[in-house]
Length: 239
Image (cartoon, rainbow, N blue to C red):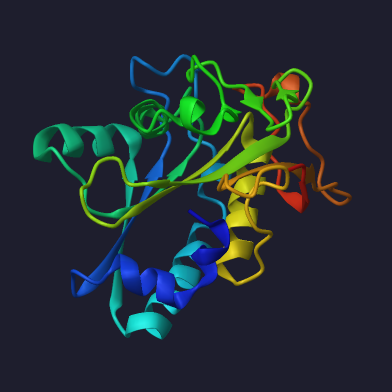
């Protein structure tokens, strides 16, 4: 799979060849599932860029096949309920957040055997997220709190030609960075696959947090949960 194809209208036409509309499901994290080990309040940053991403996908679909896009958003726990009830989810899916807060991310990484397949990206156990680079660099939240990952998978919940996009950070800033990078791909400004292995549709990025000059921010330690919830100025691609 090639990340650059996300910006191609013909790619999205192929994903909708068997239906009249293109289904696009966005799965947001709650941290409520028993499998989620990190206490997680809903963060406003989890929803950053969803509108822009939806518009970008809709434009590509209309250019490629003049079809409509059916977009819906779900919580991870609702996504799981639907899968267990129906046995399949025949949609193109964007999953936001890592496995410690998003049950759908945990299921994706496990069902697709992500680490065994890539030998990079999120490592096992997925619920204790760390990211391994292609050349062995390990990104941990203690030293790389702004690091995130963008990866592309076949939809492991469907037997049809569908995709799953994972945008997840070790913390909130890394998640925004991965979403910003995804938007660049959808707008035709991609950066290929992994810089050290062009066969891997997996990018590791850092978000550069925005510096605020006109608003006072609480110290992170006084926030509940204590997390750096800010926007970013830019994205730096590590690999």
